[in-house]
Length: 315
Image (cartoon, rainbow, N blue to C red; front, side, top):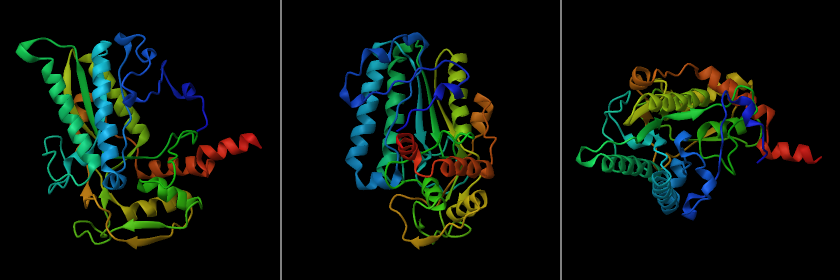
C-alpha cells in the first residue's frame, strides 16, 4: 500500500513498528525504550472467513498473543490495550449488552472464540503476577469493539481490504463507487429485528481511536489494572438501515439482493457503554450520518483504494 504522512494527523510523537510475531523473535528495535511504550497487536478479524479457515485464526491469533506477552515481560513493557470484540458475547437475549453479560457461551465463530480465549489468557497472565499478594505494575485494558466503520474525515486514511471485503460497510462503499455490482444481504428472516436483517452497533473509527487514547490515559492514572470496556454507541442499525444511510451519504443507488444467513452471525448485537463513560470519560460522539459521510469521502476520493493512488503516481 502507499505510504502517507501519518504523523501529520497525530497530536504527539508516535513510533510504529510492524513485525511478524509468529517469527518468535521479532527485532529488538521493537522495544528500544520499554518504560515509555504501550503495546497493541493485530489479529485476523473476519467472522465469516473464520468459519472457513478456523485453524489459521487459532494459530495466528493465539500464537501471536503468547509471543507478544513473553516479549513484553522480557523487556519490562507492562501495559497492553487488547482489541477484543463483541463476538465474545455470542447470542444474548438481553440488549443492550453490558460487560457483566456472560461471555464464552454461544460464540458462533472461530474469530470470536479466539478473542474470548485471549481475554482468558490475559486474565490468567495478570493473575499470575499477583499471586501471593505480590505487587505488580502490569496494566491490561480489554476493549470490546462493536462494529467500527467510517474513515478519517480528511478522506486520506480509510479501510482498503485486500480482495473481497469481509465486512459490510467496505463492501457497501465499493458497490456505491461502482467497483462491485451489488451487495448480498445475508439473511432477511431474523424475527428479532425490525426488517429481518441483522442489527449491529456501528461505531465511527475516530470514536474508536479516541477510545484507545482514553484507555492509555486510564492506565497512566492507575498503578495497575485488568479491566474490560465496551466501545459502542448503544444504538443498533440493520443491514438495510446501513444501505439507506450510505445511499444518503453518497447520492448513489446501492443495488442489493437477499441471500441465506451467513454461518456465525447472530440476529442483533449492540452495546451498553456506560462503564467506558464512567471510568474512562469516553463516549461516542459521532452519529450514523458522520460515519457514512466520512466513509464515502474516503471511498470516492480513492475509488480503487491505495492501489489506485500508486497507479496514478506511476502514470
